[in-house]
Image (cartoon, protein in one colour):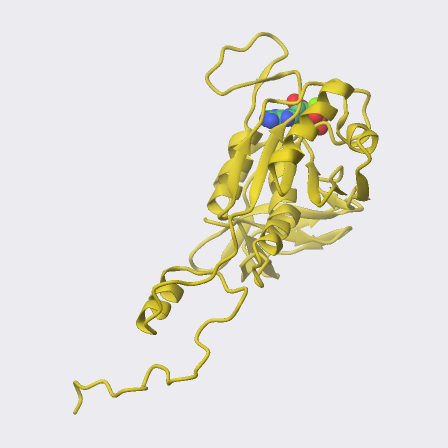
Length: 270
Ligand code: AMP
Ligand code: MG
């Protein structure tokens, strides 16, 4: 009888095999299929507008004049949200001008459940996201979070839509997107699992945060569980972000020697 599978060994009539809010990957879909279900009720795709902000931005591939840079945040954020299951809508770059930013946000809100902007979120005289949002009558739920990178991040609500204003530096944009915007997207998707996957590892070199804010540091976690800094931690350094596979949340005024156990929040999809 070794080669016989008995009825009900996997699950029985009445067993709840999937729960509301569960994400459906290959095993969950196969389970539904094995239970005889050809159709499942799922949440509709969440529409996300990704908008970069800044007169200095040019599309990747376009020639650059002095003072201009390529827009890397649009690629960064649209691929992040698309791979998380959102329908991503692009809008033109928001210029450094109040009325045009208001018009851009209006357009974005009319198309999306969640608007994600990058840049112009701080308090400089060329930062128009927050003033534009407030002039439109948007509610500001929070502005500024005591973390590094990514302090000038804000969250707002208007007419049933949501805006998350991310900072412009690409590493700040990605860290805040992953820590705050991705969980928001998952909630809108009806998902019960909103956190990042985490793995416990051991520092192979010291890691320190002399600052006064929590520092989410880019690290490389290797297959044997050893963790080291991925390189320069400044918020414009994409190279160390692209080499890293996650973040370690280092508390303020902290020096950790090699050998310290740490929790690595792994980038989604890496
Ligand atoms: P901001 O918050 O708009 O002052 O932007 C902070 C820094 O990030 C500036 O050096 C910007 O040029 C840069 N930055 C803003 N948006 C982008 C983007 N979409 N791609 C690459 N760098 C950006
Ligand atoms: Mg700017």
